[in-house]
Length: 59
Image 1 (cartoon, rainbow, N blue to C red):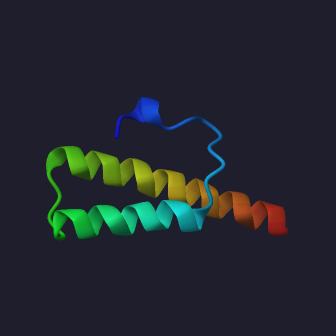
Image 2 (image 1 turned 90 degrees about the vertical axis):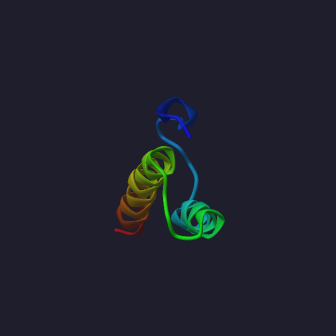
């Protein structure tokens, strides 16, 4: 996954992103290549943003 594949202001929920993270770990057997690590890092950033967005909406 390249940084260009993430749209700024993505509307995916934290649960959706979490499922993608889980699928990545399952697909790789728990060992990430450099490219997969970069994908994982992007997903974690997206997940954190979704979590923060959910907290703001709930406030």
